[in-house]
Length: 253
Picture 1 (tube, rainbow, N blue to C red):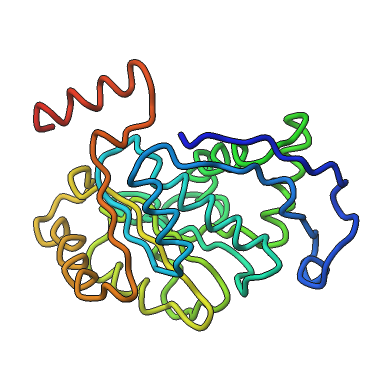
Picture 2: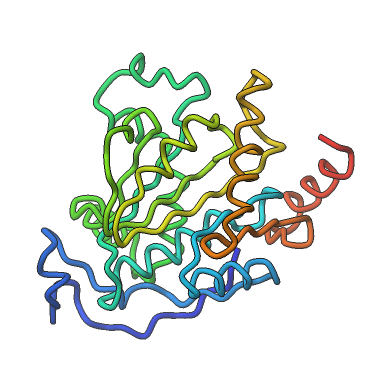
């Protein structure tokens, strides 16, 4: 995972609010974000491509921090006063069968179980003194719609403006879903895709090939997209997990 630097801000939440912060229901300063440095060449390339204003496709080996660093860059921009971005839409297929309607509760209730890893990532990005302080901060992020979770089933028919779209586990989306998502991007919006085509949960061949066909189109858009492939040299998890991932890939699983 990228290296963190301790934040220097001491200002309480809600003090010295700017116009952008006041527009939100429960304003939050970006001063609580820690500085995170890339740990590999491809992580560095992703940081640089993002700063150049490129849309991103980050694909390849698991354990390389693809989702973490894209989410960090997105959150940093959304909380910044110098960008037009108001929120992050985190999009993924919630279940392999996409039958979210059969799960109990509202859309948010159904998505809750899938939000846990992202909440853990966000916790690592902030310097908060206690778990209770972080829970309050994370609650603010969600209540002010800084982070919104969506499944592919609920994104159709919308236009996404002034936002950053992070499509995670994109290998589990078929071509129609990927096509539907990218055509939702509106004014002052950025989109990023993270995934590993070798780890798809899809069963049908035509669906599994969807991400590959989608990437062929993106390859023809170098002015708009940076495509960054992560490999075993980018694995940042240590010890047992890293060794397992390396052996797994070496054996072709």
